[in-house]
Length: 170
Image 1: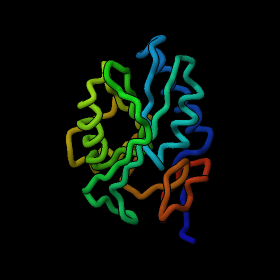
Image 2: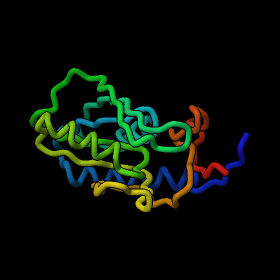
Image 3: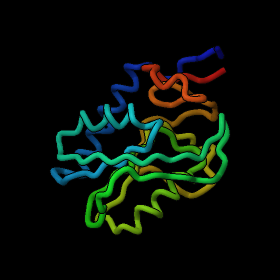
């Protein structure tokens, strides 16, 4: 097994998730939030985040893929698991990590076609130095270095998602 170096501890992540939830609650007040959880990587983050929100929430899942091993392919494929329409809804896309921005930009364009009232994004980890398109999250947890990271839902060949912390794969 490869060696790992912890980047953010379980406690550091929990504190930041609570802070993000507070920011989101302030933004949405008591409106219903349609949370789009991007599978598979953001399921841990989304679960922790929505439990911190004391506003009404509907959860939807989108399976998106643009990676092969540790590199982005640049091609986005997705499957939306909900038949719900998002027209006139307050939509929050919850993503684990934002790097090139290609996937998030694709999703924003696709979801916009459904004409939500609002469409915002929340990412836990942001590799701004990898950005290939002009997309910025509305809510961001941590800025991270340009290293391949695992844990807290993020994987390498489907392994390490269960780690409670974020680690750099060495």
